[in-house]
Amino acid sequence: MRDFAAELEQRREAGLYRIRRHMSGPHQPMLTADGDPVLAFCSNDYLGLASHPELVDAATSGLVEHGLGGASSHLICGHHSEHHRLEDRLAAFTRRSGALFFSTGYMANVGVITAIAGKGDTIFSDALNHASIIDGCRLSGAQVNIYPHADTATLAEQLAATDGHKVVVTDGVFSMDGDIAPLRELASLCRQHDALLIVDDAHGFGCVGPQGRGAVLDAGLSEEDVPLVVGTLGKAFGTSGAFVAGPPMLLDYLVQKARSYIYTTAMPPALATASCRSVDLVEHDEHRRGHLARLVNRFRSEAATMGYDLMPSATPIQPIMIGDPHEAMRLSTALEKRGILVTAIRPPTVPKGESRLRVTFSAAHTEDQLDQLLDALRESAPRAVTDRALANV
Ligand code: PMP
Image 1 (cartoon, rainbow, N blue to C red):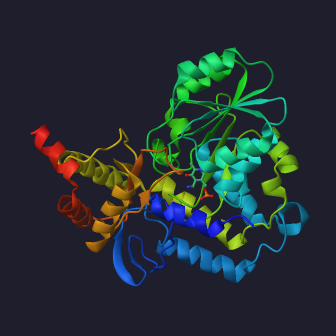
Image 2: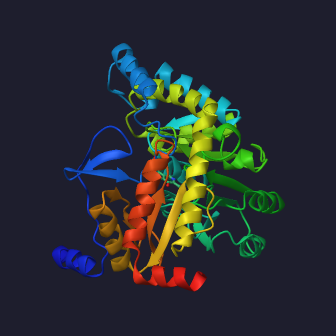
Image 3: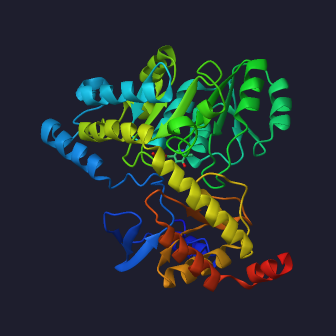
């Protein structure tokens, strides 16, 4: 038998061992981690909706009305009218002609990519795409060409050198760096080379674009330019589940062929009830996005002055780049001693040498809570960071 214990030990020694914390407390961002109170700056609850009373009420009345379990897959007898209502609501929100409700974003990406591309086709995938896209590409059986992050010049060369069906897939907002894909250039290349463009905007919906309608609309692109967009409901929408939005013919194709849609139990209808309410809140609550943008701007300016190395991101994802995984763990632990929870992200989630603290902001954070984060960062700054600050003066 393979020596699994030795592999775990090697992971520990390399600073790459993953742990699960026991979290409790319903109210992001104030939680307890293994029993200790913490102020979290690492969730994806960007608009602070995860424990919003209106969503809890909607879910509760949905439960009373429709029961709990999904009971069956969508194609047997699990496709509830509440799922359908949510799909219509999501289509209207994304300004697309239709939407298909998946159980998770991971399953949406795996399902879409494996349905759309197969043996003999070629997928072009950004080097920093999310793991669910990578897994979809691997499972599809298609030839996979990974282009350097956001490098449209290299992608253009790869597309020109390839025959057959072509699919380009990218995160909209990149999950670990927080930057936005060059969507207009990608759409134009896809038009030129007759490739199908899929954008996973899991982190953009709710945060980016007019009324939070996402990075694709913000770039002025239509369903013709980007036939399929993927979104998750587990982040800014504060619930759970995911969707793919696009033309009915392609969605029908997914219903026929996306295995992660077909072979799984439908989500509880009450979740769809709550998600419909969430789409209303996301669409109309401009105040939350404004507050979030102010927090992000203040963090960027003050953390940079302290000497921290930030990425060029204008979204709520604000990684502090560290490099070495042990160092990243040390900073995360130092912050936690001061009551601030920011998990360290290490390889293989990010490339080697790019370990980081993935700081994320939520409209639920107050200015005072941002002060607490900044104070903790000031007190915990590693030597290299304080040296950089002095050199900047
Ligand atoms: N796409 C991206 C870009 C993500 O960051 C994530 C979640 N981290 C997913 C898809 C998966 O979404 P879900 O959590 O709904 O499975």
